Length: 88
Image (cartoon, rainbow, N blue to C red; front, side, top):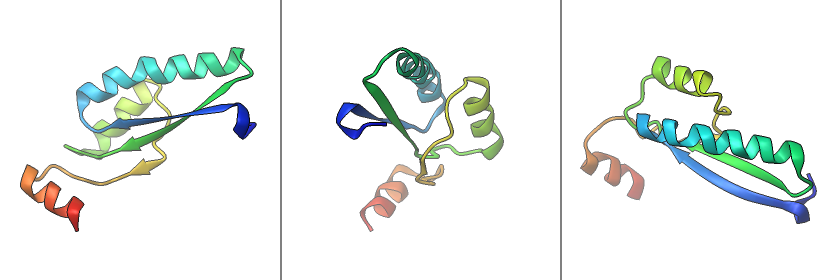
């Protein structure tokens, strides 16, 4: 990929509705890259909010979403705990 001819898109996904919304976006990026000289590099960040390893893997696999580049491992604790963890 030529860095001067590349667009970077960061996709953040964590809960079930996000996976459903991300699937067509990732698919469109893949299709675009097959047919264009101007490539799009998608970086996927998985917050792992409400995380269940089996369910998470199924969403990525069944919806044909590329594996995430980063997993933040936020978990499914209270909002206050998650925010406090982010700040530290």
